[in-house]
Amino acid sequence: MRIDIITVVPDLLTSPFGASILKRAIDKKIVEVHVHNLRDYTDKSYNQVDDYQYGGGAGMVLMIEPIDKCISALKSERDYDEVIYMTPDGATLNQKTANSLSLLKNIIILCGHYKGVDQRVRDLFITREISIGDYVLSGGELGAAVLCDSIIRLIPGVISDETSALTDTFQDNLLAPPVYTRPADYKGHTVPEVLTSGNFPKIEKWREDQAYDRTKKLRPDLLDH
Ligand code: ADE
Image (cartoon, rainbow, N blue to C red; front, side, top):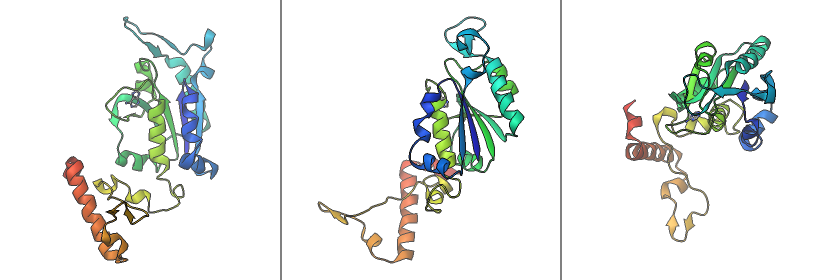
């Protein structure tokens, strides 16, 4: 998979891809992530990429021209399955969206900043708009990092334990059951006996029951689907 991210703050995207699972996925060449600085695509002085909004009002708006140039340059090299715009008024990201995006070959992610982008960018180039939650961030970069993490970890070979991603919370609309590790007794707080019993069918049944009970208690809305 190849992901191209367009941003005015490339520095914000350095560390999410420079450590842990995402770094390993890049090192193993399972995924390529290319970060493009929008300022490299403007002819204006001072590398200007934003301007005041027509009609007045506070906040700067990212201009269409540099975005058009950047997206067109990328599209001239390869076909893209989706051009995603990170925005608080997009569809809220969930596991189902992450699952389906993880199957794609090439995607572009455009990060908004300031007051957003000229509406014509959304009308002409964007195929999908995604929010990571009902709150406003300073820009789309952290949202893009969250989106990429949720997608990349699902690609086969990225997580060493193949089944691990499939047993995550939200797969099958259930929260994950509780997990424990050593010691079996910590200051009198013990691990549920079934987990140390070695009876694997019984352990599996316990996990299913716990997942259901936890979901019913914490996120009953998930059981309605
Ligand atoms: N940009 C600003 N706020 C955002 C959000 N909640 N999700 C995605 N992109 C954003």
